[in-house]
Each structure stands twice: as C-alpha cells, then as structure tokens.
View 1 (cartoon, rainbow, N blue to C red):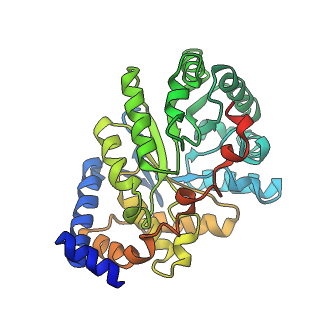
View 2: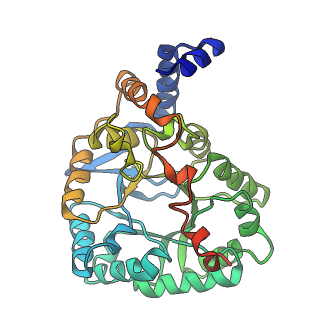
Length: 341
C-alpha cells in the first residue's frame, strides 16, 4: 500500500482490514437481497429470475459485439453452440459492426433457435424518429417479429436521460413499439459513471416510468472505483429491476492486473444479485471457459469476497483497469454522433 493510501485510511479512521470487511459485508448484503434459493440449475447452467418480469434466463449471457469478430460461419456456430449448451440470454445492439452482429444472430436463430432464447438488443437514437427507425431495422436484421428486451444504449452523459424522456424523445418510440407488440420489456445500458445510471432511474420516476432492466459493468475492479455494484445495484434490487452485469473481466483488463484469475472474476460477478452476466465470446475456447465458470460456481461467502476485494483494491483505485469509465475508447456513440441524433 502506498504512503498516501495509508495516510488517507488513518485520517478516515478506517484500517485496510476494516475497509475490506465493510465492503465485503455490503456486497454480501446486496447479494442476499436476491435470494440464491430462487435460482435453479438445469444441467451445468444456472437460471435466474429477470427482475420482476416473470422471465427466467441463463446466468451467462452471450454478448453481441464479439460475434461480429470471427468469420460469419464461426460467429453463427458460437451462438448455436451456446444455446445448445443452455445459454438463453442473447445480447446485441443496432450499431455493432454496422449491423453485422444482428444479421449474424438473425441467421443463427433460424431453424427453431429463436424460440429457445430471450433476445435483447439496443438502440442509440435519442429522438423518437431515429429510435423508431433503429427499432425496425433491428427487427429486420434479427429476423424476428418481437424483441424481448429493448434497451437505450450508452446512457453515459448526464443529459442522456433528459433527451430520452423529452417530448419527441426516444422513449416515446420505445413505448409505442411495446404497445404495438414489437418489444416486450424496456431497459437501458451504460458503462461510464454510476451517477448517470442513478439520474436515469430518477428521471424515469419523474415521468412515472419504471424500467424492467438496467445493464452496467460489474467486476472486481468496479468494487473500488466509481462502483456500479455499490451505488446502482442496491437501487435496482429494491425496485425489482433486473441487474444485467457486463464486462465481468473488465474487458480483459482485470487479468492484466495480475491480481485475479478469470474464474475469480466470473464467480465474483455471479455472486452479486445479477440476473445475468453478459460477456463477449468470439471463440469456442472462450465459450468453454465461461461455461466452465458457471458450472463450478458457488456463491462466494463473506471471507472469499473479502479476500478478492483485498487483493484488487490497490490496482483498482485509479480506474486504469476500467478504461470504459475513464476514457472514450468504448464510447461508440461519441465517435458516431449521428447515431444518437
């Protein structure tokens, strides 16, 4: 531990050991709110309630961006293999690989695969007109007449909630699409700062609306830096809004810290009250690893959680292993402002 860190802890009256105990207890309390008895296993897969929706989905979700990386045939193979092995939650987005990810998923969901899964995709448009256009394009690419969960993508700016809920904003198009039967549930995503998520939830309340799901980074590094797990997850649990975790390995950066293993990252994210943990898988090897982590999962007790938090605290404090929070590397809509309008 650095001298400055020791000084800060001394001034606050909280020792390193006390900090870890407090953090672990808080995480355990949040996890207990979900109630692990509610989850079920079928074969090697775990299935959990999707908030208050009445749906049950696989605890492992297949990310949509990465299936656009390998050749098309390989991407389709990964999707179908994941489904055959128990994955039922599929993630995607209107803008991934200029629509190629949705097109591949649409092809993979032919031959009866569509009826086996819960499909989520996202739109970027902040205006009603642009959002409506993107919804219809996603439906066409995915080759389906309904999307199970539609989410507002990259809610990363403080003004995004205002734009989405304004008169003529994207929420009007999403609600109309829901009434028309094009989508079933509504959520939002973001990776930048917990305060933006909290503002989105508050803005929704002001408009008499309650989301069905919200997606955010949930990993061992997040616990120490601008933490979605500590600030947002408890609010979602309280409201019965499904917690969709993403970036369980901090987009691979957590492993570069040398502090944790892939399995530890997975078991941490699954130990939080997440309905599903979504990860990008662009090879059969990574699919196998993720499935093995789920197969071997048991909720971390307070002692194991404390040990993970202790060894990740120092590398996590600066946020350098979560660049999606601190830089614009992951901000696709910032690089393509026409997508949001």
